[in-house]
View 1 (spheres, rainbow, N blue to C red):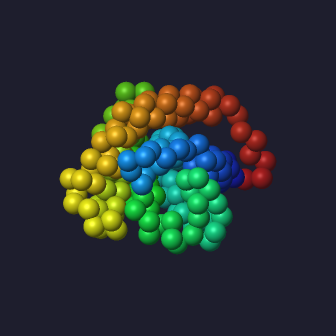
View 2: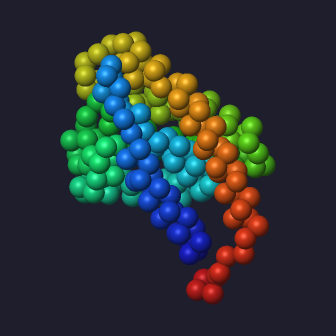
Amino acid sequence: MKTKDLTKMAICIALLSVSSYLSFPLPFTPTMVTAQTIMINVSSLLLTPQQVFITVMLYLLMGLLGFPVFAGGGSGLAYIVSPSGGFLLAFLIAAPVISLMRQKVAVNFKRYLQVTVFIGMPIIYFIGAVWMSVVTHMGLIATLNAAVLPFVIGDTLKCIIASTLALRLERLTSSTKWVTSYE
């Protein structure tokens, strides 16, 4: 990988870590509202499938090793096996799929939004809900009502934000010459 790619990946890890601090709990669900999905989508739209997989894997590894990078400053294995841990693990699958699907056509807002809303978020919701259902021993329908439905409108807005940011960053980086003297 080139220095430019590694730099983009490092910035995505840092922003993903910071975005987890932009969070607040809802009284009726163990899942917190965070800005993580914005950064997962931005990272997925800017990086290749391999790059975003490595980025999310390193982010999860940091959290597992005790760095406070999960929602609300959480970390450790206990956080991953918690009811909302499945949503974090879902990022590992959804992010490369979003990246792969967005690369199929030219860069545009409509495509970015479609891929994040109709492909990425359903993957995250499905894996996260199944995980939560197993961990909490709730039925899948009850889990969907508690951990997915309350978040759909907000996550759609986050996908709009992510698609807008990614498109602008994509245009900015494609028009800017990067210093490549070390490559």
